[in-house]
Length: 126
View 1: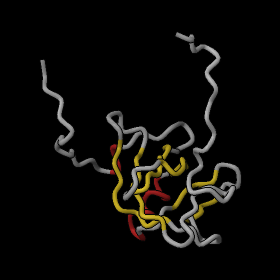
View 2 (view 1 turned 45 degrees about the vertical axis):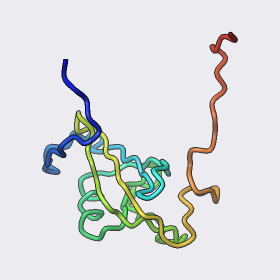
View 3 (view 1 turned 180 degrees about the horizontal axis):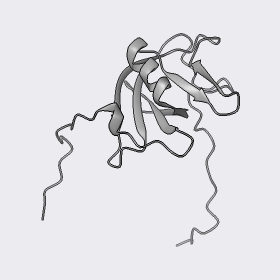
View 4 (view 1 turned 90 degrees about the vertical axis):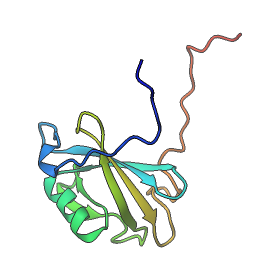
């Protein structure tokens, strides 16, 4: 049996090895580098990833507006990119950031977009 450790060696991956969906997009999970909280999920295409890497400001592709947008460009809630990791299948990204400005990730004015809990109707009392 293989021993599992939390300190696995990072494998360098070239951006050309990423697997984008049929629309040329890859989901990007945004995580606070300091707290570990998941802040939001956005989508990047190859150019948005390139812009993020070049400027260290998180850039997304807006599926609804069909345009690039840099997080915080209008709100001041900028994400300073610290690192980017791809998952094992290279079809999703984890982007670790340090929030700048007011530090609000969500358009509702909250720190994180993940403030809704899902009620579990399948849970059996015990």
